[in-house]
Image (cartoon, rainbow, N blue to C red; front, side):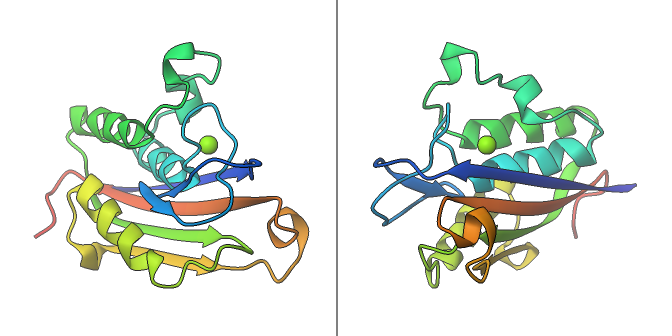
Length: 161
Ligand code: MG
């Protein structure tokens, strides 16, 4: 059996701090605002995993009103989502991510994010794609207010061969 999940997340830019995308620190004058480390890539990926497993979003599992998740490392959210899927005998088959950011230009960083996601999902890098788009200066992404991410993850009860 195979199931597919879609995840979406967006965060507003902060006035300072560290920008993390897909568990990778990206050089930029400011990070993203959020209760956790605001890693929009990992949040979208975690939601895609939970979606494929038929569960609710990460906000239900890790409420932003819970002080224990303040500045939390979002890799833990992905690990928890994978564990939940794993309890149902499901594991990730592939992961496809699109990052919408007017800035920074992600260029070579995409390969770093891809490698980190592959590691977090226990997948070969050939089963992970990380794409980046500007929003052609339109809307909140295009105006540089924040970053949005769309992710799809397929789960299977048969390990990828
Ligand atoms: Mg988020």
